[in-house]
Image (cartoon, rainbow, N blue to C red; front, top):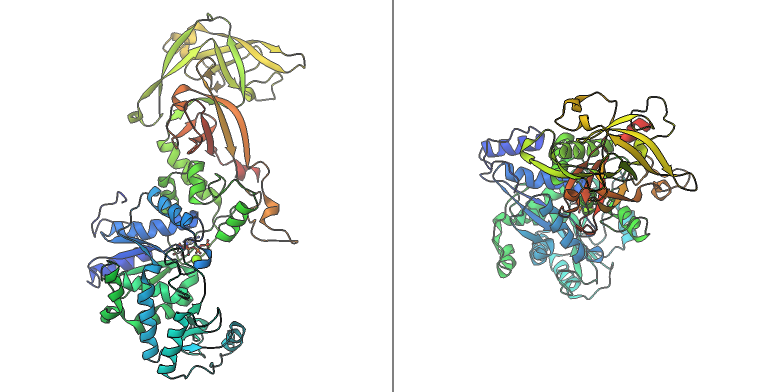
Length: 579
Ligand code: ATP
Ligand code: MG
C-alpha cells in the first residue's frame, strides 16, 4: 500500500472527493470506506488510468479503508486474459495492492436474479423492438421518446421470455430486457435503457455459461453494491448516468434482499452489500498524446510503434519502460489535482514531474552518446586511477563511487569544435576545458582520416589542476563529461522523443488523422559508452547521465555486458523553447 498513514485524520489533501469522504466518516455515515478500480480488460491501462488508480487506491489507504480491483468484463467480444495480467502488473507497479480481486462476471448470477426481481416488481420488461426501432422510439434531447409496444407485457410473460432469452432460444439482437422508467425523461439514459442483451459469444471467464450479458450501467452499479463500495469514483462522462446508477441500486436494493446474494456464497465470496455513492471527477488528458484504447490499439496493429510497451506509448507498460517511476506519476497526479473541469493539460506537466522526481532521486553517472576519443598525451599508456565521485550532488546518503580515469577518454563530439561559433565554451584547438572531476585539459591537435573527418583529439592534462591540487580551482569556461575508453562499456542508447509533432494529433483536419503527425525522430538509436557502474545496474534502474538527461536501463534488453539505456526525459524542456 502507499506509505500514507492509515488514520482518519492524517490526510491533508482537500479536494472535493476527499472532503466528502472525510464528512461521511465524521458524521458516522460510514465507519470504513471502500473503493474500487474497475477497468474493462479490453486494452492496456494508460496514464489517464493512473489518475483513477491513485485516487481509488490512494483515498482508501489515506482513510484507512480498502480498495478492490474489479475487472469489468461484461463485454465478452473485446476482452482478453493478456490484458487482465497487464492490468494487475500495472496496479502493483504503482505501489498498490487490492483488498480483493473481482470480476464483474463473478456476479452474473446475482445480476440475473436482480433482473428477475425487477421484472416481478414491474420495473423491467422484455422488448422485441430491433436496435433500429429502439433508436427511433428513443426520441431526442428536445423530443420525448415513445413507449415500446411491449412495455405493458404481464410479469408472467416477461419472466417466461427472459428465461427463454437466457436458455438461448433467441438469436443475437432479437430481444432485450429493458428497465421501465420514463420515456419522457429529460435524461435520455432514463428512457427505458437496456439492462440485458443477447450475445451468443463465449466469455473469457464464464465460457459458454451465458448467452445474455448485462449492460454496463446495470452491471456496474450492482457490482459496486455487491462489494459494499461506499464511494464509487468515476470520470465525468458518467455524470448523466448517475440517476440510472441510483435507480438500479435502489430498485434492486441488495442490502435488504440477501436472497439475491446466495450465488456469492457458492463462489466463496463474502456478503457485504451496501448502498454506494457515485462521484465523478474530470478525466486526465494531455496534449501530444492519444489516449483512447482504440487509437492505441491501432498504433500497435498498424506497426507504427513496437507494441503496447513501446517506450513512446502512453500505456503504463510503455512509460514504465521509458523510465517513468511510480513516484513521478503520483507527483503528477498530485499536481494536477482533482476537479470537475475537463481540460487538456500540457505534456510538460507530465515530463516536469518525471524530471523533478529523477532530479531528486536518480544517481548521477557518466555516459557519452556520440563519442570521439581524446588522448591525454602527457599521461603514460598504463595510467589508471580511480577517482571518487558523489552519486548525487544534493543527497549525501546516496554515497560515492569510484570512476576509472586513464590516458584515453571518450568525450562528446559536440563538446569539441574546430571552428568554434561565438560564445562556444567547450573544447577548441589551443583552448582549455575542465574534465569533470579530473582536471583541466588543453587540446593540442586533431587527427583526421583520409576524408577529413576528425577521428581523435590530442590534449595535455594540466598536472597542477588535478582534484585536490592547488590549481584545481583555476577558472576555465566550460566543464565536460567523459568516460575512460579502456574501462567504459559499449552501450546501445535509445533516444526517445514525443511520438507526435503537434499538440493535438487527435483533431483531424483536411482528412488527416493522428497517423499523419507521427514524429519521425521519436526514436534514434545510437552507440555510446557508459561508465562501469552504469553498465552493472539492474534493469529499470534510472540515472541522470550528466549533461545528457535521464535514462533508464531497459526493462527487457539491458544486461551488464550489453547495456541498453532508454532516454526517459531530457534535462530541460526543449520543446517549449522550439516555440
Ligand atoms: P478509454 O476511453 O481510454 O478506452 P475507458 O474509460 O474505457 O478508457 P476503463 O477501463 O473503462 O477505460 O476505465 C477504468 C477506470 O479508469 C474508469 O473508472 C474510468 O473512469 C477511469 N479512467 C479512464 N480513462 C481515464 C482518464 N483519462 N483519466 C482519469 N480516469 C480515467
Ligand atoms: Mg470504458
